[in-house]
Image (cartoon, rainbow, N blue to C red):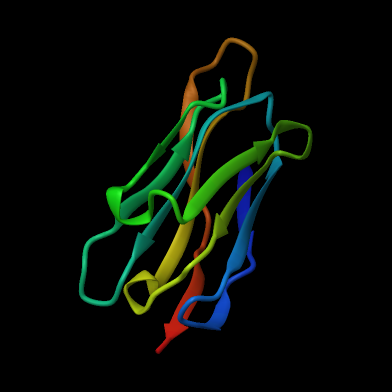
Length: 121
């Protein structure tokens, strides 16, 4: 089994910064894409940022220039550095990883439990 655990969420004032981390553990041979998604109250879950195994990144337009996604494959960890936060960034942030559990197996998507980010005005 594979588990993803997010941390780093919390309450921050508008204009502030937070850094989210997501650590994967369990039976892991290789991790492919990593990503951060968020879901605000009453809204659908949306992609925030993704990073491929080759470190290619993709960002939602709303966070470009403010958020940075990175990864540390030695630690099976994804990061999301968030700067210049505003109230519209308030949401539960979820980590997603594509994990290969066997050498010849396919990648399977796993999700973390989410971490709350609240930005006050």
